[in-house]
Amino acid sequence: MTVDAPDTEHFSWGRVWELFGAHRGTVLLVLGLVVATSILGVVNPLLIQRMFDDALFPEGGPDIRLLVILTTVMVVVTGLTAGLGVIQTKATNDLGQGVLRELRDRVYSHLQSLSLSFYAATRTGELQSRISNDVGGVQTAVTTTLSSILSNLVSVAAALVAMFILSWQLTLLSLASVPFFIIATRWVGRRRRALTGETQRAVAEMNVITQ
Image (cartoon, rainbow, N blue to C red; front, top):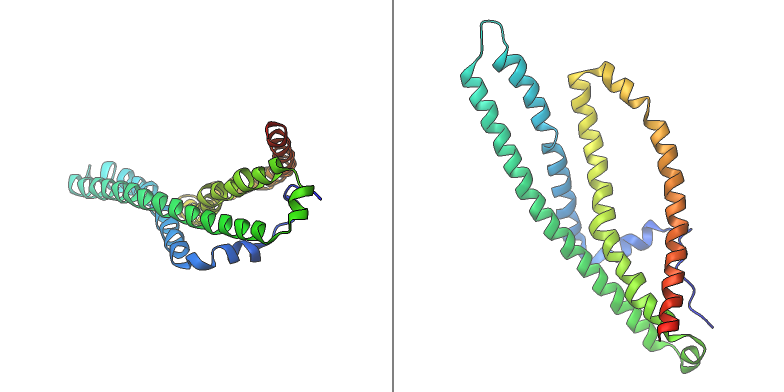
């Protein structure tokens, strides 16, 4: 009996949510920070438009008072975005470490419940690979992938609103190229999924040889 590499072809959001069940508070905090930073990210472009149209080049000459106000607001927004980004990074890392610890505890508990015949038939290097490499990959998914997905979704929504406000014609022209990027991304995703599975199997085999 051997330990197979994780099946990268099947994915369950239910199992993902189960892992995050004990960390709902941190998940909501990260989600709120992602939404806040993404919305703040489109504020300055809108203010730049106001700065050029209403402060620098309005009819009757520059409006210095409005220019100072807009500049101050942009500086505050930039500082606030940076501060929220630091908090988001810490909260995301804490979430990743918590989920990783819980998942490793589950793996260890499961391994302790298995019979001696299982260990007699299973290569030790493969078990080490599952515990160290595969489980450790969850932390990267939590701290990088999931937060990036949430951030990108909110950023796209906020950016579309800002783009329609600035120029709906250019926005429609930009959206016309989206299907091509979706097709390319899906192809790259399938290739990366296959390569990730091969990498996991190769690392397991290397650990077997080393052990």
